Amino acid sequence: MIKGIPVKLYERTASGTDTFGHPIYTETPVTVEDVLVAPASTTEVLDMLNITGKKAVYNIAIPKGDTHDWQDCRVDFFGTSWRVIGFPQQGIEENIPGRWNQRWMVERYG
Image 1: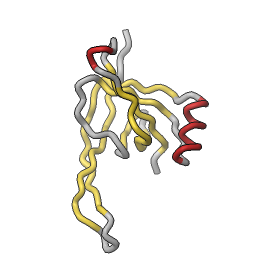
Image 2: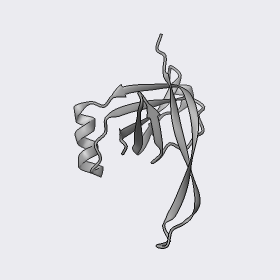
Image 3: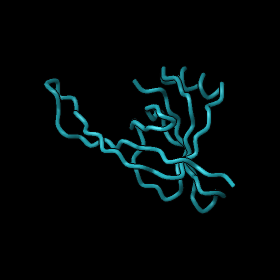
Image 4: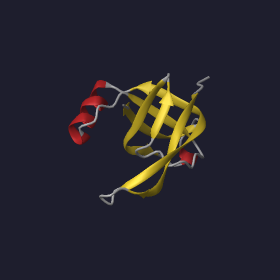
């Protein structure tokens, strides 16, 4: 049986702007259970690097029914901080077997 791990997601909330008018965010940690983590393939790493300039390290699969906003958020797992990059690959929950239907890529943070 496949089992995910708990991942700490830092949800971002706009809390103001800096002197240049750029938003300032406050991060609130939330633990999301049963997240699958797998290394990104060489092809995925190169594609993401060519498209965005960011080096993907892992793929994370999010459980069905999750309503958190993962885009550009920081996540912690394996004792390290990561940043979610790119856009999700997501399917229709009813048509996908298993407990996960959304996949994101992460890069090393910091």
